[in-house]
Length: 172
Image 1: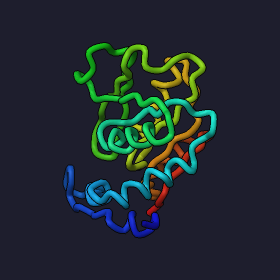
Image 2: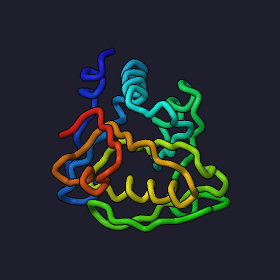
Image 3: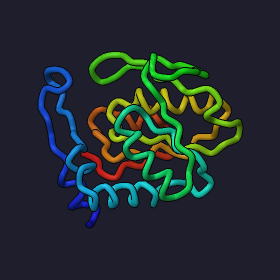
């Protein structure tokens, strides 16, 4: 399946998770094996060759990070919401389009000098991706890029990640 056909399966859900937010739902893409393969393959095409670890952001980043790691022999580390990890190395608070949140890095998951790509489904305001990069770098990792399926350009997330290699498969 071609990437454009895969991404066309994405649906828009108005007023989720709060009024005025237009949620871009990747569930139909993830549910279709050919679409999932097309998206994961396209993400891989833009990952720096020195990368050895995928920092997958909760929760849809997990669904993309696992097949990406398996298919191209990367390790995968989950960046989680508070209270989900048994051993936490670090935590960062950040702003979202519709509130605030925190992200945690598991202890021992990122090694100093390790090359890491940050992965999520959507880049909106950039707060989550910026927090993920901060966690990786504070652990001594080197962020090789930020990869997402969808970038909502009007929310300015890319500007918040200035100086970083940001790859989006689709920008709206």
